[in-house]
Length: 88
Image (tube, rainbow, N blue to C red; front, side, top):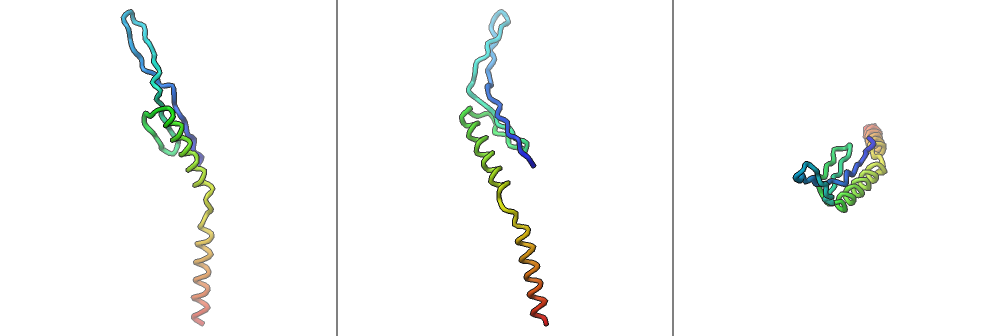
């Protein structure tokens, strides 16, 4: 599964003034979303960048971990062949 992490920043606060005009103020807050289901909630922009970096690094480490299924199969086959050999 390929994960896609998105940092949504530039969240603003809208204040409506008399006369109908709206002022948008930056809040310095951001949200991190990922296709794997990660949702950081609203955090500061620096925290959002750190969360995204940590998540990407963790996902990359998980993808680069060696696949141990071959070793398990080899060990099982070896144990079975030794058991058969010992029965003789």
